[in-house]
Length: 499
Image (tube, rainbow, N blue to C red; front, side, top):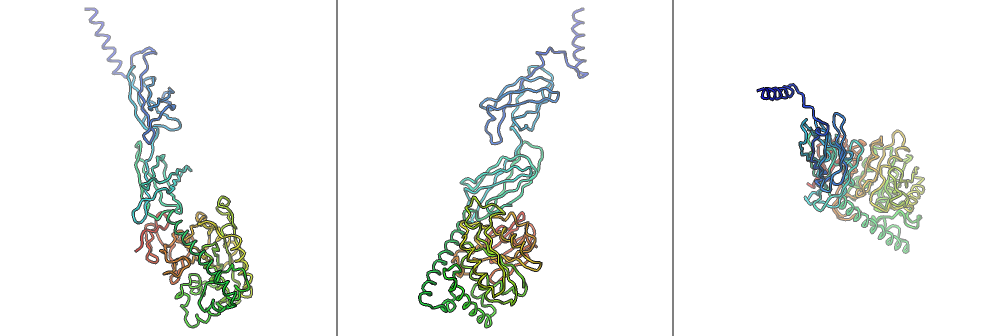
């Protein structure tokens, strides 16, 4: 009877202790439990042969190393809550070990929280674009970069941050993604970008450059024949292009003056002569001559633009604004610098001059010097750097005009927000039919110049059209130019289709 009473009393004491939140007095060797860790990287591969640290709220620290399969069994003090640290990363879920010895807990987790982001790159025909570099910039300064696969896709495992900016070659602000954090271990996100792609853009630039140089060489050979026969007037009679960098500057000057006189007579008979003849530079300059009386004309004189340099010089020779001191800045993208030497904002290759009609030789010699000191050598050009140089030289009432190669990418578009004046952009190469120096290929308007005009409250000028309201375009709106639709997405114009 006495033994039975003692056992009942002991059971009652243990029950009371648990009810009051106490635990039995275990010996030190009996205050441990076990954890089976199974740790994976975000891409599903095992967190193999790598350090793991379990840090308890009460100060316990347990260190171990996973095996080749990302697994490990570790002994830990019980009655503790641990966070699991894999190198510099911390797993989302903590693990709570109850106050009972020798219990084994299974813990499976990714080494860190992540966003699984898929970027799909395709063109307007819905064809996937492989081998395109995609870059993501984070608000924390981290940069993630990869190349699209055969399916035009790239997959990123990203940390949880508030914002990512997506960029591809020639589009620095494709989209900004802002993940909504709902506290889960991972989040799946994706986006699709539709554009021609950098390879197609460079292919079109190569065709334009090749055709322009071919026309230029043919013009030089033809001019050789005229020099031999002494027939200067044939140039004006047939409206033949005059290569400004021809060896005999005397002949160039003489023929430009003859051609300018012919144009004056034609314009008296028909004020729309330049538009009807598809003169990409002269038509808008003539049409806007009263609206913008004072200007500095910034001209791309790289190889692909040789065919349009003649029109800039002819504009000076026509002398519509008598006694006006005209200003010109010619740029050649770095005076034959190699690509590795061309730094954003310090590429150089600028040639500035100003003068009245009497200074005609000064203007033409400055352009010739710039052309002979460099022909570009590659597709992107330093347009914005040249515009910044012109901005420094302008006077209060001067408008800044850019004579731009539509097919050349702008190397330094990231600098455009340093421009404090509207930029008036004359696009060369989008003339109708085969009248441009770049043949009959499809005239796809370069969005980069639309973005430049939008950012500076500037304008775009074509043969017969002036577009002044680009800066009013709001996010999500669309515009149409020459039958081409452009959506304004994330602060940038993106061509979507041809109507």
